[in-house]
Amino acid sequence: MSLDEINKIFGSLYSCKAWQLQLLSIIITKKHNIEYFSRRIVLMPIEKLNEFTSNLITTYIDTKKGKLLQYSDVTTYDGTAVSTTIYELSSQNHLILKEFESFITTVSIPDNESDPLETPAQAYILSGIININDEEVDVKLISMQNPIINLKHKFLYDKGTFEEIKNKVLSLRLAIDVMIVNRTVYFFSMTGEKLFNMERSYKIICKERVEEIIRSGIITDNDAFKNIAITGFNARRFISFNTQSMHELMNSDIRKQISNKFIIPLSGDRFDTNKEGVCEKLIKLLCNKGMLDPFENTPVEVTGIKKWK
Image 1 (cartoon, rainbow, N blue to C red):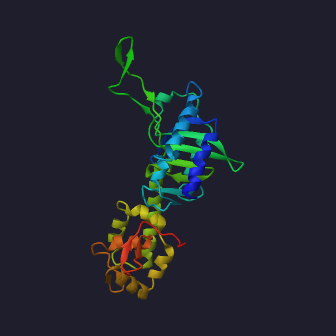
Image 2 (image 1 turned 45 degrees about the vertical axis):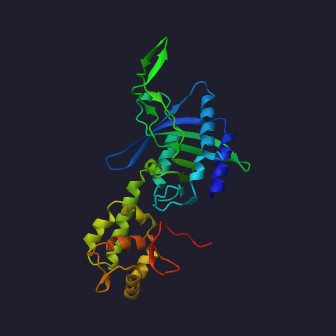
């Protein structure tokens, strides 16, 4: 999907006059699985929800200062975290498949009885049906911030004096982190990853890919490589791991060529993962983050790759 199509979807949101609002709790179990709980919220007067949603939409598509203007690209989710990119991910992707189904089931049957002020919410959800090209489209807008807050040091004027506001209040921010259109997910910020506990998913992928690299026999010190691979931002890089590139590197002649081009030292005919910086370079190379400058033929780091058009 392009930015123009995203903008078109936002413009079509005005057509929905029956938005539903829910609080969402995200529970991570001891086994690091994810569970959801949703509580439906009704605003009064009844037209206030549509009024808020209209303000939210305008915040994004205003032609002079709309939030969509800060984005330059829509691309398939690959683990990078470029603030000017909207990341697209199918609900069928193994990274979120189980979590997505659990999320959809939960929000389709929200609770209506529990005390909303006692709900440990991490987000609010706006759900609606819009019309695009004469087709009904299900849309969900998710803002990943607890909307139930305490107003410390806030006072309400009443009968000549200011009285401290002691009750919790519902505060809806004019910003979203995730948009779901039918069964496709769009991340407007990396905070949206928390909706599906994606850190767990990419750590599992990282572990699998590291074992694959170790089995390939292309590195010298397996433990040194593993320790670096699972540390910091490296783990999420494995989302865009290129299996074909690794298979190519199992050829010793190609390893020598890559060693020379990308300045990755060898020990014998294997990458010397005991030397500083070698593990990081190899990870970037195998995860589509290393390319050659087309003019100077020198190695450069990139955020990701796309087919040339």
